[in-house]
Amino acid sequence: MTLYEPEPFPQAGHFRDRFRIPHGPDGRDALYFCGNSLGLQPIAAAEAVQAELERWAGLGVAGHFDGPLSWMSYHQLARDGLAEMVGAKPDEVVAMNSLTVNLHLMMISFYRPSGSRTKILIERGAFPSDRHAVASQLTLHGLDVDDHLVELAPRRDGLLHEEDIEDYLERYGEQVALVLWPGVQYATGQVFDLARIARACQRCDTTLGLDLAHAVGNVPLALHDICADFAVWCSYKYLNAGPGAVAGCFVHEGHANHQGLRLAGWWGHEEKTRFRMGPEFKPTPGAEGWQLSNPPVLALAPLWASLKVFSEAGMDRLRQCSMEMTGHLAHQLQERLDERIEIKTPLEPHRRGCQLSLKVRGRREVGRRLFERLEAHGVVGDWREPDIIRVAPVPLYNTLDDCNALVDMMEELIDA
Ligand SMILES: Cc1ncc(COP(=O)(O)O)c(C=O)c1O
Image (cartoon, rainbow, N blue to C red; front, side):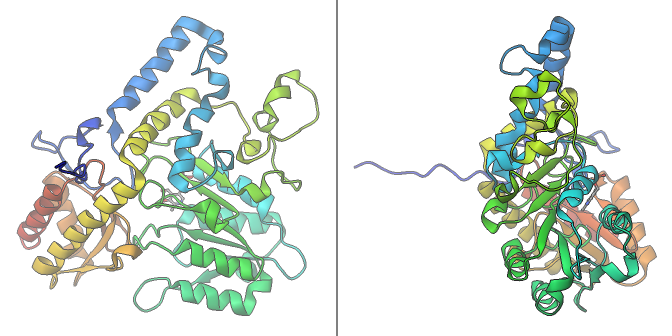
């Protein structure tokens, strides 16, 4: 008889030894819950950067053309990994620039107000950079921000409901030229049903752009299948590619041969004739056609290194670990601290990712004090005004023990 034993499913923290864990004030590993802001450094990142420094030292300009890591196409090393992370075809993604820059590039091409279809719909409380970007795009088109920027309000539960987007678009969809929506709301940690939002946009022929800053590397995505028009994200949060890392951009293959306006640069020109140095711009089909400049190799190296860890772990498996771990943290907080701490993030597992947004009941100062005490005890989370403590257990490097230690500490310090 052959005994079939399934491969043990990796627990949260299975890949912890692939990361550098910062130390707390006592010199021991910090309780790091801030991967929603800046992911930890993969050990392979430093090796990848060092390798490029060596190639630069040894090869000089020849590094542009030398071997499989040639700098000419270095951005393409990240392509398959990124495509996997966002559920896209390789030609639909590109690593370039930073999130807000990419958002502007996308809006120049895909926010084309005309006739009575001029408005942009975002969520109230959107990340400030997104709001600045859309407001300035409106101004660029000579449109009044107050009249053309619609900010959908959360309900009394503090959350945004997909149904409200549907209702709004049902009524006013013909006036909306662009919906810009997050995959995960940065303050509450709420995960959105992007397929449902995409269908609502498609029903009224409205362009859908996504800010996936808090979604990529956190929850599985299916951008191609849901037919989002474009998406942008940064790589320094759950993607662990380092501070200010090179961001990502998705353009659906339906727009691969976009004929309309784009802000162009030589690296977006088709690869095979780029170096003929002609005056005409012939865009590379797909997302790469929006590139402006040659890729920042030293900044891309950690992204590539980090994506390899994701590819090994598998996003679906990480999501399963994450649901279990964040669920465990939520459960512990409710069991032990419910009278003191309110969880602002939705409690249904499919409506949240890694992050929990916590509000200490009562006066803001009590919450702030708890946050500072936690910090002094080696807990790394973050504070979002006016009164939110964000903590994000990340399945690549956090463990259930980290979560238990956090709740122990909160219980001990809340009244200390
Ligand atoms: C939701 C969201 N959007 C946009 C940004 C801005 O990103 P960047 O500074 O990389 O343009 C951030 C940064 O944290 C963010 O969290």
